[in-house]
Amino acid sequence: MPNHDLIPSLLHKIHENQLALEAAILELSNWVEARGSVEVADNVRGTLDTIEMNEEFIKMALAVLMTPE
Image (cartoon, rainbow, N blue to C red):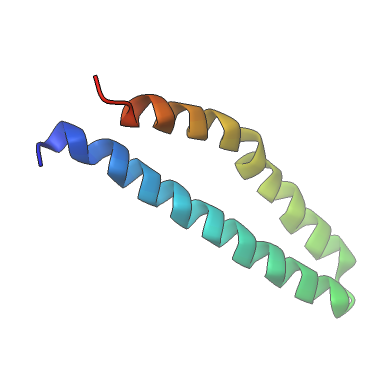
């Protein structure tokens, strides 16, 4: 597999990892909130907004990169 074919697949896997980390961090923030640290949980969820805001662009860019020429 040529290197230029590997890059879209690599980026796709990194994106999957990013989404998995987002889900895990969200679970932890819910756990923290349930134990009384509402402010901390809200701060964590606020930082996760960046992932959500960028997700659509990342998906579109990956689709373009993975489209055969």
